[in-house]
Length: 429
Ligand code: SF4
Ligand code: SF4
Image 1 (tube, rainbow, N blue to C red):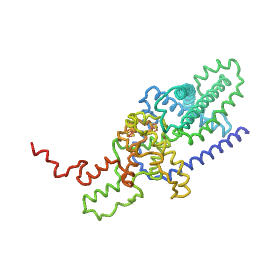
Image 2 (image 1 turned 180 degrees about the vertical axis):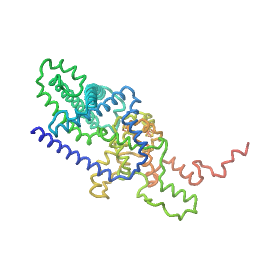
Image 3 (image 1 turned 90 degrees about the horizontal axis):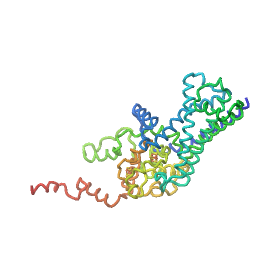
Image 4 (image 1 turned 60 degrees about the vertical axis):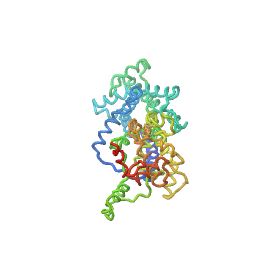
């Protein structure tokens, strides 16, 4: 009974802090622009393939496979964690064991994966601490990112050690009548503990360490780059479904152009529900869509996008990862002010103070970054929207583009020749 009361109290505190954090992030979403979502069937397919199947991560086969093992391992281990919460509330043990073979399957795969993840985390830690992996570096990778990663990896390692501790002490304490299957722990337990069956203290210690680490981790994650543990699956579900090269038009601008081309329709009523934009393109966080902001929260900072970006590879300032790291940081800076006062202005903006025009104009819109991103973040559309702001509101395009714009306006083509001269090349034929 005492254990139950302590458990329920800690659970309520954990849920309270988590709810506060989720509400704070939800309020930031409310500051952003709409992003229509449809085609649910396609989205389920893409989630099964890219998120659950982890298909994009295998482009780096070895480290991708290890990462996928950690992901799949966490999925089965989470089922065991749910059982622990039910046990803790109800004051019972192994509450899900009545599910028979399913329970055996979940426990056995969770037991195997606990040891697999331990090994995987050691590999990840060695890579981060002792190897120079180029994609882990960059102007946007502040020391905090590295510390974040190390803290998260250490917590995951301890989670797996304590889970193994629970399994080892459980099978050793109940040698003939334990529920579920624990293939690795059942083999290791006699080697570690010999004949001893008095496992009560070690079992309780492992159980409480594991559950308290889960509670702490759930509340640390939203403040670290490892928030992707929660956000990456929804982010894949909400992927952009158009082909990668497709650059979306701005609907009201397209309509204006069509009206210019067909004066007959100049006085046609605006389509129902059309909203006149208060700003063309994206200047700051309140101009992005909620999906752009979700992208920034889901970004794992893995650097796969930057590693394939031709602009970055050829020494330009652009790093596609930085675009989303900056968006997240800017929302954290400006969001609280905007929530208090909708017209809050700190005389800064995403463009200029975080992302320079040099970075934005370095993008070739090749889409290599979006192709490579394991969680389907789409960088070029946001970069394009920021360029739209520069061109349409600031008239701040590079000089070479301004010449092209003038030519299109005057000649209907990007070249400096009058349309009447177009066929001149045929005269000498
Ligand atoms: S689309 Fe732009 S940011 Fe992405 S890889 Fe190509 S050049 Fe780099
Ligand atoms: S945008 Fe995608 S590929 Fe780039 S760092 Fe973030 S998760 Fe990795």
